[in-house]
Image (cartoon, rainbow, N blue to C red; front, side, top):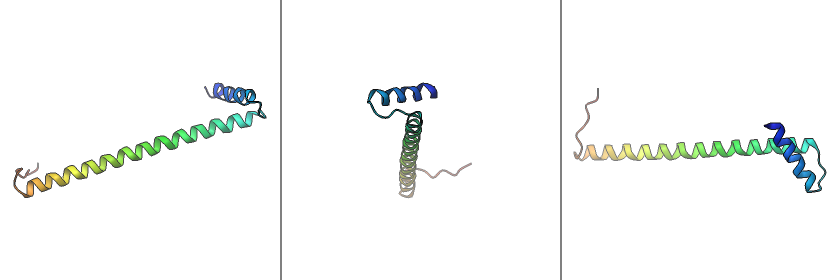
Length: 77
């Protein structure tokens, strides 16, 4: 699959009448892999932080409901 992408990037640079070199195609593939990796990491951090915020909000609301005696306190296990 990597060889296919390198060949495709090489053909694109050749069709644009740029200076086609294999090293450009390899570096472009590396840049695309790095860009996709950073996007996945940023999305994971975003969803994890949203999950933490929602969890803290739910816990604080449960504590508030227990403190005003609308919910019975759970004695635990």
